[in-house]
Length: 289
Length: 256
Image (cartoon, each protein chain N blue to C red):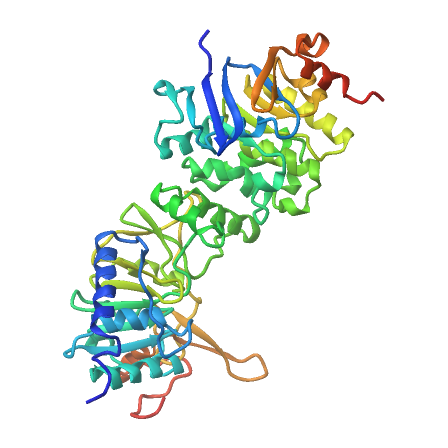
């Protein structure tokens, strides 16, 4: 038992956030302003995601937090503990067991089901921000569906780098209407945005919530002669041997030695438990990372 | 022949102060009209009203649209007006920085209007951008440079290329040669004159430089304190000014 209200936020605030979420679900990709509260963590640590999670959590939920694919980094551990303490919900590291997953920078490799909710932490919700600094103007561009400028960014990429070099926060068009920033997930994850689960995006500092309902059409922007490509490191995971998952590159010594491993730790551990071994892997043992 | 633009009774005031008062004129396809007057005479206010940047208090600005014929651009919906300003209209600012995206390459600047109207083929966009850069005398190898690396004259030419790439029919120019030195000015005027004739553009040029209108404009409108005091063919107005203010204006030009 705790002295906090369930999931830290008071009921009125949660109600306000739920309204924003419902509006966001009704208008896929539209950024709904909401009265973001101060949370007991700094901006940039997931204050938006935490508020959305607090509003959707119920006592029966099982909660999972991902930070850059991993369950065991500072941000993931502290947010998981936060809700363990303030909501008393069950927590897990297994994607399949979780009903609410808060994530930063990744979508799990495991395909999500329709009874799961994915909550994203969003630093800058406005995809047009770095092209058009005026908020008044970007809102007008969204409302009038003037998205030519988004392609100017991709044009610049190709003219400077010979290919669309945007590798994360790759802009998408939701249900043929709103252009949306999918938060800084790698573009490898963009095809997965078309999923069975509910996706909610919370930006605490910028005070915006937006959403992608299940089975919504999400298209990555591209050019006819430079089509979108979901890229990843051209390698297999050195721990579990997976060739279909997004990889982190790790420098292991001063002689240029490196290894690639799954960014999704739960996915990697699951495969190793099942007996898969990569080039530098060892057979799975409990309590050994 | 039908006018391309029909302006009737356009007035705009800022509180008690008059911006421009009861301006009416017709502009025909291929015609270039100059608006001259001293600072504060309401030239720029009028131009902003015509281009849809400002809402006039009264009056109508009818434009001969490709699809629906004559339409009042003041009462049409904002999406329609913005669409017009991306396709059939162009606006050349006095300061190239206002009309360009300074952190986007020259090619991207020219391509923006194409992408805004739905072009989605990189190769074709780039080809057109390079073609337009050469038409405004910018070397093709500068296509990936940012406008901040360009000289003032080049920036102004780039702004013109960026505006003309979608083949507009009406160009609004606000002091297009302001702030450029005379030799650069002369080349820019030469270029503009060529493009206007070649593309059969209609243009409205606001300027206080009488030499500019002498070179470019077919017709002239002289403004003072928000009112139009004299209109007529350019040569007629400049060589035989009737209104006292026009006489003052013409006699104020410095002779070398």
